[in-house]
Length: 419
Image (tube, rainbow, N blue to C red; front, side, top):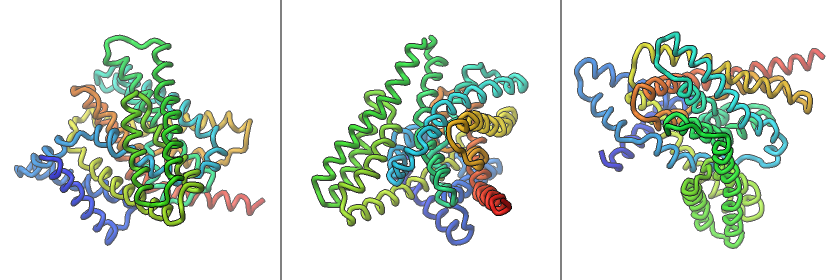
């Protein structure tokens, strides 16, 4: 299929599913779209088993879409910028220690826990998965997905400090997670291990290089915005920042996600306050909100359709189901241990741990990284585990996080009243 036909199908499906969800089902938009897409995919599989050829056409459509490039080299930059644009930098600065620790040490710790336990599970299930590949799965599943997290946060009223921590962590830890994934990927598939010096150099270039480049690109764009008062030109400048900045970062091996988040924070705070008129701010917000809505719709429809690309085997599915509690336990420990240490330095709200554990959603980025693996049995089992965890996170955790937040906050209020 040509690119226009693919886009036409995806936009049509997104529009129809959005209408049905909004008109009748009334689930959160991202969850509803993925659920409808998943159900449609399962129906196509059933029809294929009954002898209908429509499943083959659907598989051809999904196979013609490079999900990894579509998300990581296309949609992600726009979605991250749209998310960072509305984050208050002062609030972020207040929670910098929590965000920094969760987005770095938390990801590394979770990667090790998930990888180690999954290795034991693979041995028990007689799945040929070397330890390095288990760590690779741990690296791609440990970061929370900013797209999924921000999409759900819009429907949940959380305390401001907690919302800042969750948002900040989700925006930064995917960049860290991608760097960890790339490092382990090189160790697994390059034929030679990486020494400590190479690992440090890669981490420094990707993370710090991305942050510095994002700051420079954001500052240049900020100066250009200050010099004009025309919302069409200013919106084009932000588009150039996102597309050109992400492409430049990738070209020089900087972390594109981190660069765009840093640039988005600068434009969303200093740019909004000092370089834009009220009219420009309104148009800019409307434009990026629309971009965010459209791309989110397309992404979650794509995630639902990706089930057609899976190799479904009983052992792989069982491993995926077992991976769900493992990932949650790793999330609990990677958040809980740093929190227990931070309590000695600053006040930590008691609701942080349960809400961040259950609200640490995995999404399209994990699926995209899994799809980037070389074709073969290793990719099949890792993709199946990843997809199972992602579907559970979005459908189950995403649908219940609002109830959890309300329950915990209610308990906190009752405790305060009793005092």
